[in-house]
Image 1 (cartoon, rainbow, N blue to C red):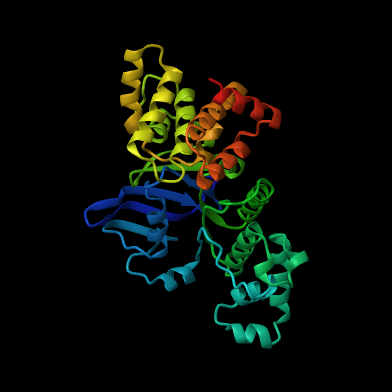
Image 2 (tube, rainbow, N blue to C red):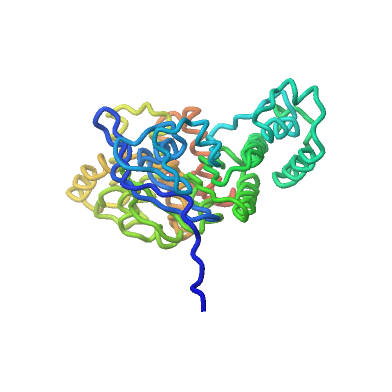
Length: 376
């Protein structure tokens, strides 16, 4: 009896190091994925995620090591040649022609030798019209196919750019933070779109939103300091002690849940990026008093928190780590206490509203917690 066939690797990264003036953005990174795989890459800021994509697309050349796509060495290949090999990249900000309609954007992408002039003034071949029509349905924009793309919502522009990428028939799609700034409904639809596309494409998604990662992830790779820290299912990586330490820092004498609450509260205070040392001391004191009983314990905890809280992590990665209603309520109470200690500025208000959306507490509970936070 013949042995079962194995899927062919589509991408191999072997021992890749990328150095910028002595700083190693990637450090002996090894990575592999097979054809037809949907892989999600996560990791804290500075983990090397963007450089990882830059190496695959030829924007950055490895200092050491090799990247291969379908067995072909990508080193020294120009970016446009790599694209023609079958690698398409979607950046964080949608790059669409705002004055053209979604249909015209897709027609232009279907034939990369076509100019804007020929797209607008020459008849599109019948086969290409069918392809574009199918893509419009796939990305959910068939009902808005002939309005200017400038009138689309942010989420719809993201879907259009994904459609434009697919129109170029790549074998591997690289999608960078596709749900940043999207509504919950748009986020869910984006997940459904990527899962659908994974039936006929290999896809790498870089993402910070952990709820979205859980929606789409089959296999997750965690990057840290330019190397692969671990790989596995979402549950496996989220419960890996190494991942917890990387995301939450060296543990003060607190539980994981308490650390997450502290980080969330601190992220409110640091939201505007303009936080004086005196203000930091006030915040750290308030937080230490919440979780330490006497003056000596509070002083120790304050010292631990100073470095611990300095690492910025997106709210979207922290809130899902809170498992109970009680933990979410305490996180909100602490956060409101922190930002209300001084006049709340616009940036802090925006961050706080984002936190409210992620915590998903009912309005009555929010009002009660806010009152309790400022009561003497």
